[in-house]
Length: 106
Image 1 (cartoon, rainbow, N blue to C red):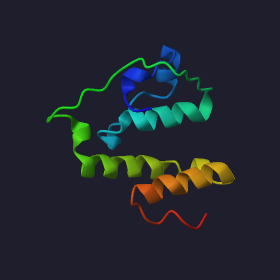
Image 2: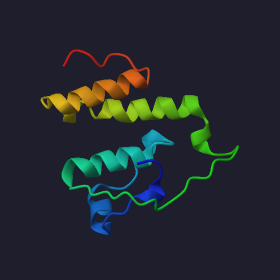
Image 3: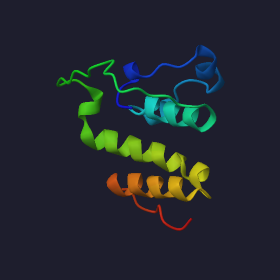
Image 4: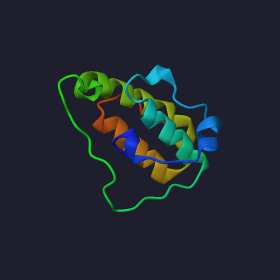
């Protein structure tokens, strides 16, 4: 999921998960979607429902900042993936791609 406008979920789910966590400035939506996916089924479809417009003032245009906050969100998932080999592999791949360290040693 790339942009918040591409996600829809029931209001009660948003309230159960306490909404966005401001610790992850720039990746609050990423964190929320991962928390929701742990507890609720996720559906998708192949139709484009939104387009993302880039411009000079986009927060997501700051690659260094976005990398840092996205790796922080991934690190928060470590306890949830432990014991699930497929999830551990995906976690490790995300940390490796993100340039994070310390992901080994389950």
